[in-house]
Amino acid sequence: MLKSRAVVVVIVAMVWLSACVVKFDVRTTVAVVTGIPSIGAPTLPSATPRPFTPTPPPTSTQTPTQTETPTLTPTLHPLSPYFVESLRARSYTGGTIEIVETLEQTSAYTSYLIAYPSDGLRITGMMNVPVGEGPFPVIILNHGHYDLSEYTTGRGTKNAADIFARHGYLTLASDYRGHAGSDSGDNFFRTGYVVDVLNLVASVGSLPQAEADTIGMWGHSMGGGVAIEVMVVNPPGLRGVVLYGAMSGDMADNYYRIAFFRGQDTPGPDFPVLPEAAPEAYAQLSPINYLQYVGVPVIIHHGDLDDQVPPDWSLRLQDALKVAGKDSTLYTYPNAGHSFFDEDWNTFMGRNVEFFTSCALSTSDCSTPRIPS
Image (cartoon, rainbow, N blue to C red; front, side):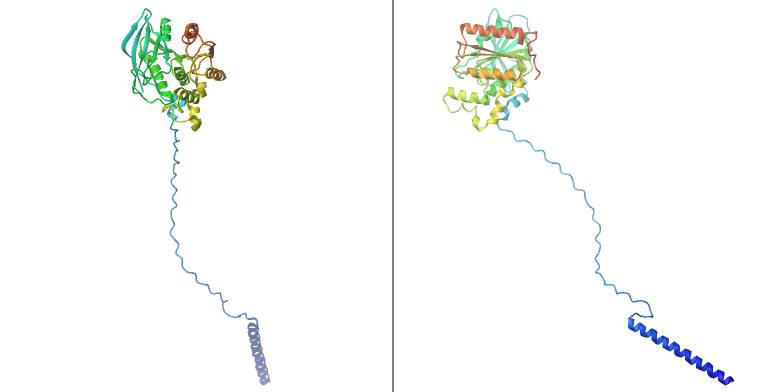
């Protein structure tokens, strides 16, 4: 009985071991078929080594230095010193009016030869001082063109100065540079004469007999052209202007007229360029384009028979002054030429005295008050 049970136990044990072997073989077979390993850690893909690249040290970024944009200096036109705006912008210091000698003494006034400084030049001229205590209102007279070899101090202004002095005005007449006893100097486009007159205006204050803030101006022919330039510069003290057969306010007109009278193609070295070659420059040289700066009343006189300075120039100036809103009056003389005589002269000078006495150099109001420079 016991022997039989032992046999059974042995048989059972053998069966169990057989089952384990079969089970192991099945697992192994499945693992081989599927390619999936059943034992051990999973195999990781090997990493591809990368070359070592050193990291450069950080570089500091510098803020660029701001460069200032250079200021461009405009190129000045070679004629710019003679432009109206340049004449207005510069200063006129003048100086002391020196009495050089006594020329004449009358019952109404005394005439003197004078000298004064103008931009480093010594300029001569003539002065009439009325009898009396003063101070007296002043009239500056600008003479017309004369050949330098023929001109003498007071020529072209002496008769008018006599009348004004007898009416109580201190008169001054510049010879201009290069004339009579004056030093010579540059005079491009006749602006040297303009500078000499403006320095004379600035010198009036050196005369104890003169009212430096009460100055009138009278100009004939070339001297009238000088007066037109002076009135657009509008210096302190100027109170009124008389133009008498005056040259043009358009510098191109003057170029051709002067050349015509000289019998040449050009007026000479003082007009170094043709108007057609520099139209913009001539526009800036011409005071007729700057009448907005006129700050005083103006009267214009012209003879209809003038064969030296076209009467149309005064008509054009009068029209331009009116367009600019200025106080101006034009008188024409049907029987008069470039210079007035006899009845025309008397009428002309009577109007000038009335102009200065009742308006320009008086304390009464003019129709147009003086506009500051």
